Figure 1 (tube, rainbow, N blue to C red):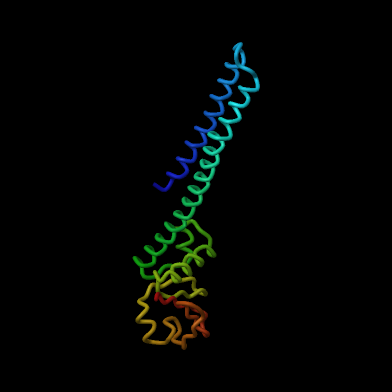
Figure 2: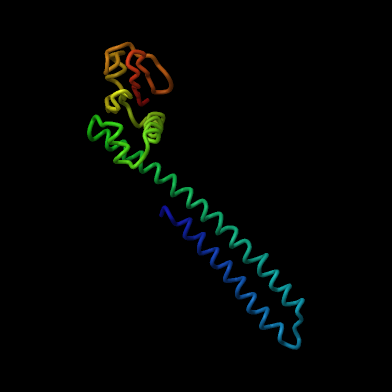
Length: 175
């Protein structure tokens, strides 16, 4: 179902081009007759293009582009789901492993982690110096008020994110 918009778009564009082709063939065939004039054939061709082919091609292009955009978004969501599954299944994973397994860059992995935290789907913490991401229950981290990495006091940095001022670890609390 993910590529249906693209397929429908391609089909509509092909139909629009076929209408133009058929109208052109009919125009050429009709011009040779005694009762038909060239201006009438051109008018018929213009009506076929403007009223039938152009809207079909326009809608086809829109659906093709929208389908392409949706496929890109679905691929990003699938990568986030895969990242979440890896971290939750293992409990802890290195950023290097995530980059390798997801075929992404370090900055893309970081953006995915922050996006999952913002959506309230992930809680845990990350030590950027060591490059390790830990999955942990948000309630456990809220109760201790201490950094799970170094034991320092926590400082809130944003929605669902706590930064340890001592070691720089980021704690992610799902709401």
